[in-house]
Image (cartoon, rainbow, N blue to C red; front, side, top):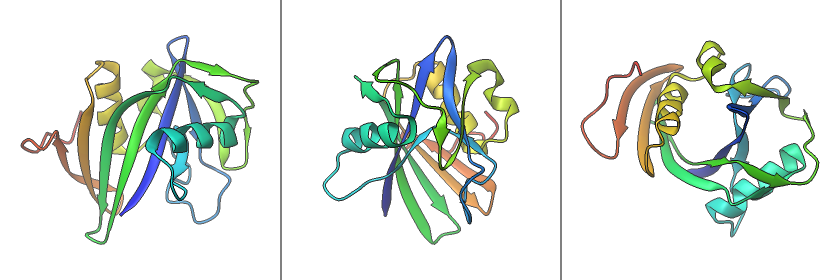
Amino acid sequence: MDNSTLCYIEKDDSYLMMHRVRKKNDLNHDKWIGIGGHFEFGESPYDCAIREAYEETGVTLVNPRYRGIVTFVTDDTYTEQMHLFTCTEYTGELSLNCDEGDLEWVKKSEIKNLPIWEGDKIFFELLDSDEPFFSLKLVYEGDELKKVVLNGEKPLDKKA
């Protein structure tokens, strides 16, 4: 099982989003996501979130808030646990130049109008409602979201 982080830096009712348009063979090609990536050896979720934020934006996160774990299951062959963070403070000079995609501040109210994964719409609802720490399981077949389970309870309606 792979482990990764995803962080949404918040400012003025907006999230810093990445439009993934620069990497070849990218599962997230043309999608809008947060900043983050896969763990390196010995990293904790916090270590990974802070390193990835620095690598992709040039800033150091201050007190990132660990919001939940999102478990992705795809085509019955792959599982990834993504550790989800938000952060309102950082130090350093923010660079919007990233080799993985275009970084842009996006109003929270406009995010659902962007090309994002169906499951992302669900965890954005949880973030916006200030849900306490959560575990969200998203099962995909190809690009289609087939099953959603929140906190191990019964499956949720996929359309959040």
